[in-house]
Image 1: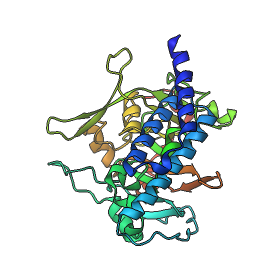
Image 2: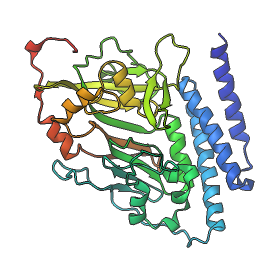
Image 3: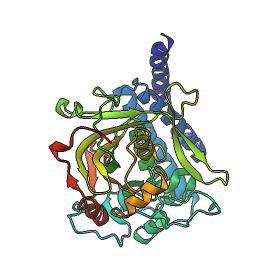
Length: 383
């Protein structure tokens, strides 16, 4: 079959070109960025197709780091910013203990390394500016404005560069909370982008969804391409693989992300969500499942859209449940119950995995306290 021969040929050609690219030191800032983004896209495609070898990922990472380093050198020379200096890394903050964080929240730095950091995004904050404010869209506080209060942005040109997302590696929907990885330099940005595209960055969530999700009938993905999970854990992991397509309203405002239906000609962007059922619970208003989620890809509203597509929308989600259900949820859960509680990535020099953890915010813990554990006598229905 042609697909089975095409992917190995594509990887071989990419590896040949990456291995022979000795011109980075002569490239312009724009050329470094363009070329690196292009081969990172190919790395992502190879990984999704299951044809990304360790050799190719390693060579690509080295080249991405070199390109970023070249861009850092150029950006320092072209701007009147004060000379970049090596700042001491702070000690990683201890994971937040229960009761440490109220819902009167502001962002916090959870881990600060020389060239990258992890920050906590509260609910109601936007990761980055998304261009001109659309009519009818709330003006949310921005994480980049928070960064200006804890970092000297003049030392880190990428934090003012919209074309490279101000150093933010990924996004998190406004109603959600959790951890965000930020690069302070172009070298760190492209290193982290390569890790993200190669499946080396972990993004893990705690989600409360409607109904008693049994993971029966969901596509099992035991031998997945992401990891080093022991066999005892693999058996409990299920996955949702369905393409996602962004949509907008007639006024140009974001609409719910559409999930491709089996057999549909509209396939959407390839998307994969892994999950593990942690507990079933209930109250007088709802039956719920607490789910551990790990992303295989990162699309807008991915977790929310995927869970809604199998009949288990996230609790208190105004966009993916009807208005009646949303109003009922608000009686016991005041916000969308989706929290990115853990991220990890490889450090550049040592190659060791660096992690950050954020426990559930107070309002989500209080919402859980409104539930009782499922009783054996209540049967196996997922309704």
